[in-house]
Image 1 (spheres, helix red, strand yellow):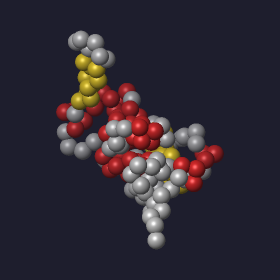
Image 2 (cartoon, one colour; image 1 turned 120 degrees about the horizontal axis):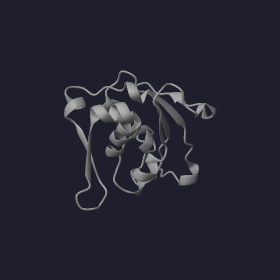
Image 3 (cartoon, one colour; image 1 turned 60 degrees about the vertical axis):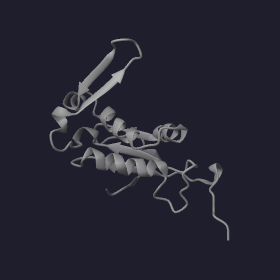
Image 4 (tube, one colour; image 1 turned 30 degrees about the vertical axis):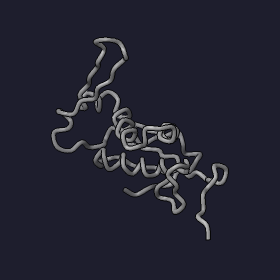
Length: 142
């Protein structure tokens, strides 16, 4: 008996809906990363892209536990000398909460072509309304 290896054309991608309201940021990001990689499937293989599409709603209601809201800082650099930008998560959650969730999910995906490809299947919205109702996403319980 040989091991089953899924091929790219054999994979049927599903759509899942995650509600982030009142849940810790890390828990939501971890579940999204599992779905994006396809680790919930019985035929998961690390070298194959067999993940699903994920829609995260209520990104503005996600929780940061402890003092992370005031102490955690996101840094980005443009590549030019002296252009290190920083923003506290309290400001980031007010201005762009979708970016905070995206950064958390990106940190839990592999840093290669599979991770970058999986991140393209992630959709994040602030409120409860999303524009992917035609795909009929299934509710995923955290």
